[in-house]
Length: 458
Image 1 (cartoon, rainbow, N blue to C red):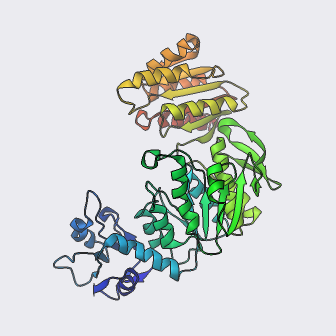
Image 2: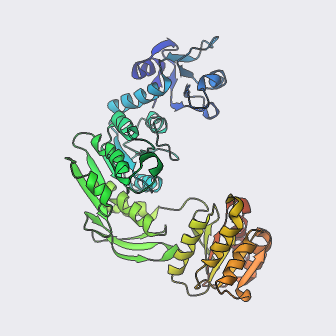
Image 3: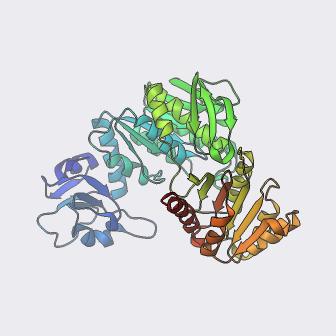
């Protein structure tokens, strides 16, 4: 949003100290992220006080919003003084929401918020100018910060609303009154703060209680907790789901394991490249939301085709007729188990080959975790290539589970594993490559794809 310091003072309820006509184009709270058009809000956090960094921020920024005015501020910088900078950040979000006509979509739930946000933004952006919150900025500072940085021409803004404590969502949604509230699911996440799942549901109800009058909620028909809290909602309800009857119900579902899912909704057929039922649920939420604000089926189809996994987080690559599933960004025992079970669901004409690197940051029981992961490798996997010293324990586990030595291979590093795989992989094979980032298995992906391009260039 492009605002002058005079407007900032008015919208935050602060006092203009200097620089009334200086214009800003972005709001930042981290002095390292300051750009030449920024206004720096000096936020007092638990550990750090942004006022320590005002001088540093002003070297680049247009000005600052502070509760203590620093000495010797250059004359060409704008300064607004407020009682509390966090409240000022929130007041600015409220004022922007009141002044600009964009549609605000807010997402909450125990799991899948970030993926669902990305999917909604992709589908809606097929037909409207869309702005989304970045990362998982979904708390009492991150959420207003997203609104404060909304471009002037945005038609739709998509934001998460998370919480660790009762009252947080009420405060966020009360600031901004979303036009559409989206619920993914309610489960036992953050249960240590709440005690019971019913109390979590009660706190999540705060979003629908604060949706704009006449607003819409998009709810998961398969989640009883979501359905329970939505009973008293008087506005428009749009449902999605798989197991229960819903406005947007996934039917004729064909799970293709790592290769994704094909399904139908309301007579339209889609192919989702992200694997697993959880991603299908997230996409159904996104389709329901996009339709609720008037995106056409054609726009939704374009959006679904544009849904891509993030870099090295489940990217499917063709390497000379073999299929590589590049999941080299990170790994842990749960994620590895899920990837292997998705691998067994995929239709494969050749072999299933699992390239598994060390999992890091598992603490003193790391070798036990690796051994257990090896024991749990499905028997439909034809070959296991282990990379790194911890993964020797994984191969021990695989032997215990009945894998023969002929199907197990070990390499100390990504380079030697990549050289072996270049000659080992054949057309028709499905190759899962998964490890913690520090093991560098993305180098194997590059080696395999480059060797194919090199052969093709002869």
